[in-house]
Image 1: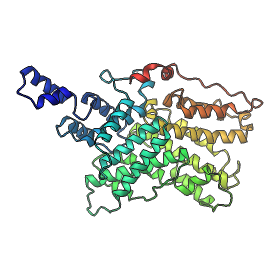
Image 2 (image 1 turned 90 degrees about the horizontal axis):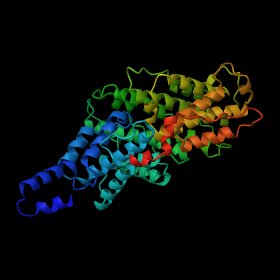
Image 3 (image 1 turned 90 degrees about the vertical axis):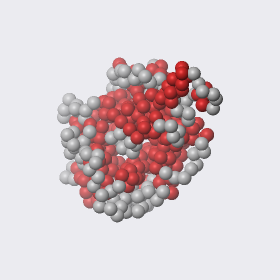
Length: 441
């Protein structure tokens, strides 16, 4: 790379050196120490596995930018952050065939490259979608690595860029939404979803409350059914607001005003209950995201109800019944009977957070009503449901998953006089997480 920089300023080079020069242009860019081939390999992985989750990057445009001679450092910063987030999210080391043959760069290599180029080119530049999306991907990398402080800083940085850009404040005047307007909407909604998922887990304040018109996105038919699933997911997150979260996490529910009445809770529960959206209309990756998010929000709403109202096992309003989390968990597992584990694994740490919440609410019921364990009416009882969710956690995050550890700790607290907690068993291939394969990807 540096040799080529010197050759450009010297005398006419020999033919073999010209060939070397052309090869360097194809393989490496002056702003990066990682080959363009490696970037493109991960971009292809992103397109096939994660674009349905993060539809905020044009992969072909990114490839074209990498291969051009413009050498815009902002492009390399963005693509390096995207590649780092992609490899961290899909956990290649948990799959039987971990790495593509032409990929030897790790997620850590990509994030170091991103930070190096950004520092060398002074990243505190004018706000733009590129720098905003870069911060989103850096957040996703750190969140998947359970590095909470840098993940929080990157998320707040992205939100600050969105505020400085007045993202989506100006309504679209044309009857046909522009490509730029659509991209701004998607970026804002990704931030909206990401902040709620992350802040609920870590008891952080939610700052994004403005809700731009979702129908604006639904009017764009250029992406086919992609937006159908994405908009369905966003609508679920509209019910996760700060007043709804605080009573659950802060312990300050006594004496605070009631946010939702019983009728409000019942109405919301009915509206967010997803009846298995058709796989012919939504990709499998979006399918599991919608189902899991629905179960997660329903579980959070039940926790809010339990902290506010006197629940009953005999009520005719199922969302206000004491054992509703068991129904949520059972229905959710049944809906996943025909999907691949890769579709769940594609959602990374966010999927783990939601699964743990569903399992925790079910365990809350079992700890308060242990008689349910001895009066199960089928071969697949309430505790089996929790164990099954634990199995999913092990397959998504590996046996070293922090969320899996939390679930194991709760299971170990179950009184032995009631039942001996079964040991979570993991498929043999999931033990790959303990090997050195992770360092090779």
